[in-house]
Image (cartoon, rainbow, N blue to C red; front, side):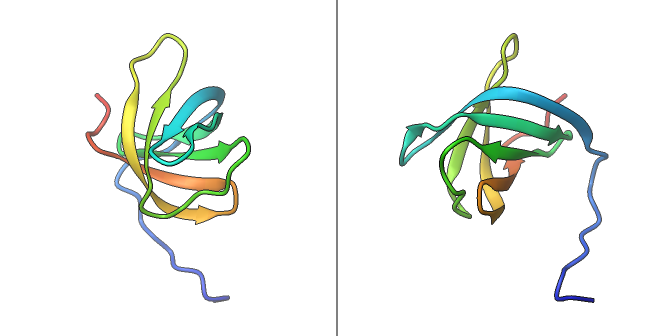
Length: 88
């Protein structure tokens, strides 16, 4: 079991591996990459900062509108974000 919690996802995640402009309220622009994405959230690899659970972020991919969300889990620079509104 190793102390891990298994969470059933609300929607399937799709691998993306795309550079993104990521901003938060504390450091401003931090940059990084979207690793995978679903209707309700995404996994990010932050460029230079460790993620902080509860931090609000804005994610922007070239050619798309920006998405606001909250970091729900963090493992160093890898974080899981829940979007404020589902993507459609």
